[in-house]
Image 1: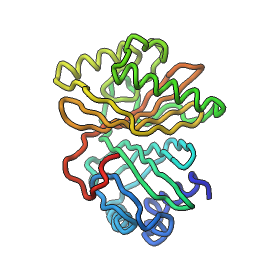
Image 2: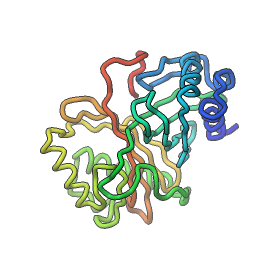
Image 3: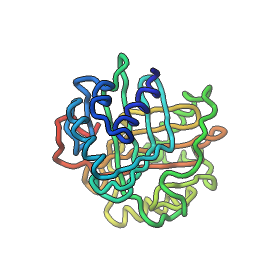
Image 4: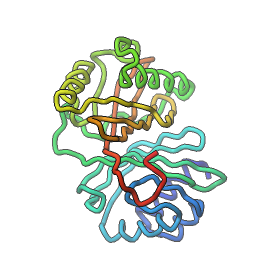
Length: 256
């Protein structure tokens, strides 16, 4: 199986068939877990599956982004109270090696009833195109992260995006550059200033680029998982899942 096929089969075993043994056969014995609440290893994954089944949790996968041995799933979890809220938007990232899933990262955020832009956290474009521009688009997005979000050269923002064409799915931010700037100011006024924004890894396929970032906001550690869509050399759409990084986890692997 390809990495994409393997990851989707694992998801089917865990969240649809609720088959711990089948799931264990698709992961390495030393499966590295970064979800703060789940124990590491294949046994940690197997222990989770009966809890998922009992809760009635359902998952919908909206986008699948694959680059090399990395696979990103953009998901919605329903009946997800066991993980913190009835409905959660999520990014799940898997690394594959030698025909087994060997590592998993994720970020989860409660889905609100209303958003600033009127868009949901997971709706919008899904079609992957421009695969021949994957590296070019990846460099564009990483430049935006470095210069604009990381603060290296925020004046370069229009190099990366059209100020008027920026469809926003973050529930607290309105569309366009004006919406992004207003949100940054509002967060700062609330003491939520970002003082560190360091990408840990990126996964790109065609017009979609995903970036996982280790951040400090308001003096506390946060994880920012972002997905951008690029069209004709400009960023035009953005989704994210943002969550605080807890001080205590069920393992010693860290969030990243």
